[in-house]
Image (cartoon, rainbow, N blue to C red; front, side, top):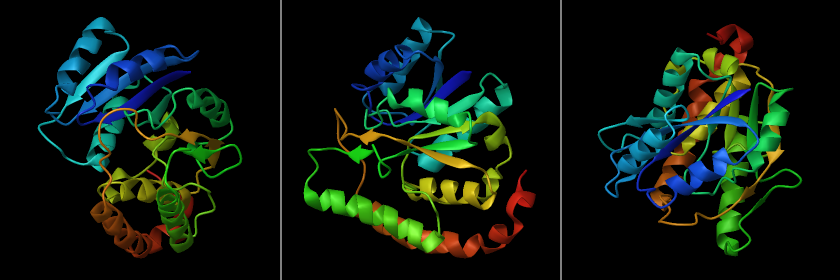
Length: 247
């Protein structure tokens, strides 16, 4: 199975070379698409050097500035789907909060699913052992909040570690997705569920980023909490349509 990892970057100069090395060490046929938003720390330049070093396995998409998580992933998806060079597509952060090794089990799970969530909240999954209690509570509450409002049966709907079959993404109407920031992840999971795709979960350990500064903020979390209600309302017709709304 040909697998391509899409990783959006903004100031990930320390992490990106290490991530590429870790991914290429896996017993999988992996390539990488880096979507860089003109990182001031030179991440884009480092990505270009990696593409020269691994011309058949690393590709770079340069964007003029910070354009958001939604457009980073959707631009990456559209590029890969149009090229037809991959069988499965991975969403993965570049900061090592998503352990590359977990991808091996996620690939096995994909054999019986249309999409796999890397889950912190199923048996065998966990969050960083060094997180303070308030952060653990906030993470779990945010996930439970989204699940309850949208009626999702999965344990981890806010995870950013995901593996898709190419055929699944080809049938998703990307134009319906309007959320920016991290709530985009919830909307994408909800849309996939409404379209009645089979979604599996594979346990992961979610680590705090190794280098650099987290981009999460209280403002982002509040915007996400409000946006989830909008998603619930906007998708009321799609919930009834089910499979017939697939592209």
